[in-house]
Length: 69
Ligand code: FES
Image (cartoon, rainbow, N blue to C red; front, side, top):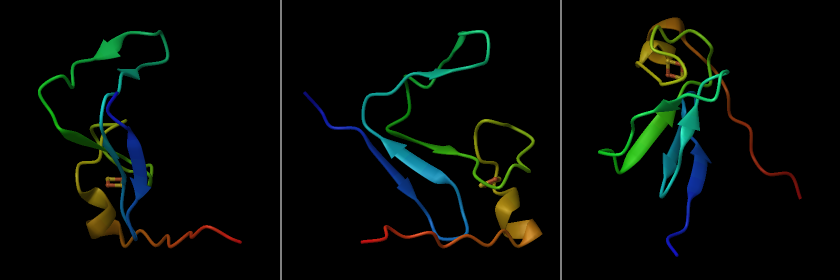
């Protein structure tokens, strides 16, 4: 079975690769079947939420969380 990964990008979105379903608050599914990877907005400013539209670059979103050990 293919693995799904979710990776936070520095000052940017979450990039999800692998099999995934993205549902809205009512449980309706976004059609992402033709995409090998998707970017989910992490800055909250996208005009195409839940997907990233690149606005994080224009607003200077700053986030560099890393795994704490
Ligand atoms: S993370 Fe890209 S628009 Fe929000």
